[in-house]
Length: 444
Image 1 (tube, helix red, strand yellow):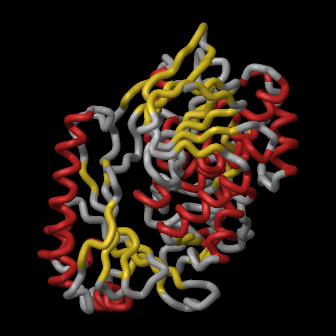
Image 2 (cartoon, helix red, strand yellow):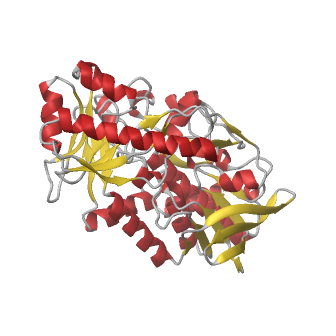
Image 3 (tube, one colour):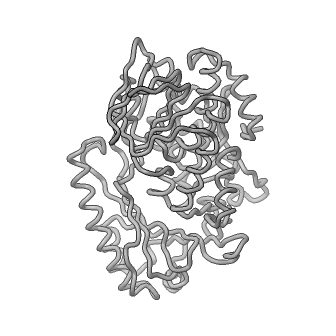
């Protein structure tokens, strides 16, 4: 069985959804391959909030509040808000020196909203489909080879975008890459039978409240959507047991009786591309989830009946394969607020804040060349696969950055397919003009 399209997007996660929408809206026949039966990726499986649509203005008195990421990512938030799947961009206080806002989403409604948007855009969604190989000729990918219960299929395309997070397409196509294995893996899970207000009381009673965000509007206006703790102020027995199982104290929700995300971390000795090592890690993470439930029941008021309500279908990663690209973003690029003549987006969040922050609450640019896989003529990569430097990666890998990169990559791929040119032959001015027309902010 064979299929043809203009743009093929591998991976229907945080960046892949936006890449496919952008390509289709630019007139390309677009196919999206996703191994699971839904879209959303890390946004619905591994995160605690979407970070971040805004600059870190609240940490710098007198700095202007600016929404940096707009375009299709904001459209997704608007669609979610219309169906009760988010309370919008909730300002953090305390915790604004980490992120000025917390954009909290309902995991299940995010899947629904993004799939509906893809259908409306005319994207061919190949869900429950595994990418198993790529056929190339001289640095040009000609076909992606996929497997599903319908059988083996070859999909021919002019342009390819790897949004798998793990670099499956790029690696199979022969793009140079490294596996740094420098982050823990996670299985974030949802906990029912709990009380957000009880958790707040637990933190405040120990003087440990580190982050708080309240819903800015809607039916939940004024209610808790995000909480985090200063672990050094929590009861000794509690925090020692939490540290043993990698139990992070941050949670988010748009429901009073539900912790939407509880994050359990585990550092693997081997790369998360190792199937057998991952199998052992999957079991270890689920053992740790059970121990976390015991802790929640024992220590947090109103949570005596806590239970596991949702788990991710597989562990999630912060990094696996890093693909060598034409430009490797470094920490100084980020902290100094550097912009490039081929920027595809502006971004202002760093996951190591408040230790590391973009200067003066500003923003930096992600250049198009940072998405261009070396030695490949029709392959773009996004998200967790760019940037070898650990501290730079702690900014570029975050969900809203991945979304913005997806719009840049999808737009570029569509323009290249339309003009019949290689990825490096696309004029930066053409790409930037299209992004500006599509409500993408590129910096001042």
